[in-house]
Length: 403
Ligand SMILES: Cc1ncc(COP(=O)(O)O)c(C=O)c1O
Image (cartoon, rainbow, N blue to C red; front, side, top):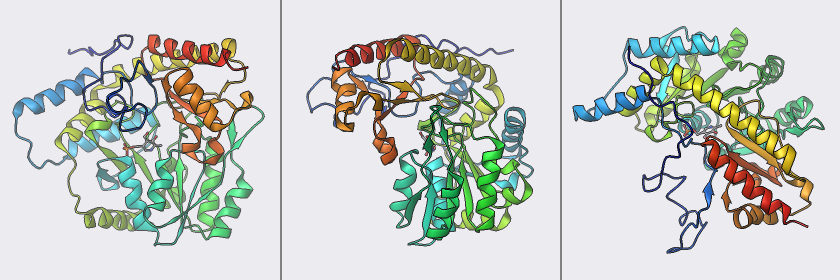
């Protein structure tokens, strides 16, 4: 039996000069001036991992490359069975029919298509900020309005939903679509069944379609992730579930995502929207990667989750022992730590400056996720432990210099 080879998460892999957005775009992203060296800035922002994917995925891509013909490609019955098995095995979710699955090049593409298919220009879409920045971008750039049911940062350091505000925002703004992030990036919440049901019921009551972005669904460290479509028949009929193997198996560059749509009416509308853009088949690289990852990637994925859990524990301990005025929001999910710098009493610009110039770290500034992200920074801890340790030590030195 072939064995997984890519289980070394400790070795630092040099990703420079690989067309990596995370490592090759310091100048374009305004971090350094043209001609200047990045001078050892650690890149811990965009959500991909510094780890090689499963060797089964790597080998499948090599076999495809060696074949040398990259013609129009499509999945068949076995592909569906693999996807179905994975969701049954790891999420206790039954994709009952191959027809439910629409393949797209990415989650944001699928979300953009859903916004166009299920709302009209001028309509309002509900999101819950602070949330993944491209939610607002994709809504607004399609001439729809954004309204936010801001998540509440509780005394317990966790984020909660204000359900009264959730319903009021829907009614007051005649909301047509709710874009849910489950689990939530960047606040790291795994929504409970009760929370999901309550949001779902309110949406049903006011005829709001739910688009549930579940791209981070495999990174669960506390609690259980519930696929939105498994809550009830009615909620399954009123929602679409957007997923991908790309976050889980570090495949963002190959571009493949799966949207599960049980309701034939919604499916038809979404499919027509996708077709009308001129998009038909996903890439051969996407197909072979997803197939290998979902059928043979469990050993790699389990080891990865263990490693990331270790990084979360390391970070949590380090922050508690060494950082004054900075807190880590409890990480129930994702590999993206949400750090609260508000205890320092600095402005957003000062926190950004401290992180980039003081600690020489490239993180995501909290306000990118909405105004309620002010004073926060998002740190991607899917990297070798040594890189994480270096980043946290640099941050400690920078924080110690704050009077
Ligand atoms: C919540 C969420 N949705 C979507 C995406 C992007 O997905 P894709 O690259 O498939 O468009 C990300 C990437 O970080 C994300 O965090």
